[in-house]
Image (cartoon, rainbow, N blue to C red; front, side, top):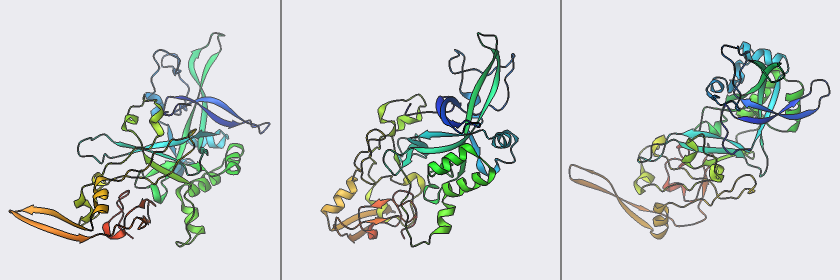
Length: 341
């Protein structure tokens, strides 16, 4: 499967045979077309010379909260037309952190567990294109949409929405065999973290089922298909002054970094997290003097003692980003900008 898939792409999705209960995969186009085409305005297939993905961008996602009131989705759910799109992960974009490069920064979200795909809940439809095939029979086109929900609190800084992710094979089979509004609500609750919050106290930490990290900005081009699409990139360093800012950094000034680790090469090749130049300097010096402001010809110097203990680490309570230096050096998380806990 392509490492960079966008609406209008033909992919394999899982469906269930309503009579036998057998689960099988079949090709469909991402981006729902709920109505039949006409001879005057037919639906085109990816194999057609004049094909364009534009019509598939209109309904490539479906809000799970309103799935029972939107006629296009309600009828599909009622008729049991559920499907699953299994992926290695998905991409989201944030504003650029660089004052020079204004391109949006893409992130890759994947399972924490090596080799485990994300099972995205979807609905599918098969309609007439408005044309006839070589056998003079009505040509059809199969398309699907992905259900979305509110983002998990740990990832709301990345995007306010996220796909409805099926937590295991039991829920996945139930979604294929007996989809319902009640099940949609349960799936949404699990994906957004609402059910986990009710079942566990704030002191009990659960293993985060997902992780995310920045990837190459070449991903901003939908046609980019190189092997480094899902490979973690190294984050750039911050200026020393930013460690002593009087307020939490704005989204445009945050520096992004992820934990060290490796994932099975069959899924993702993760590089080692980089250490910024400023951090390297901090390790060499116990005392740092920094001119933070120069106004009206006046220079204010800040002298700070900094420990160089390599084992002094802390994790953000919001995004769980692991900082490799003492809390005393940060007023806010470097990843999501949340206030230091």
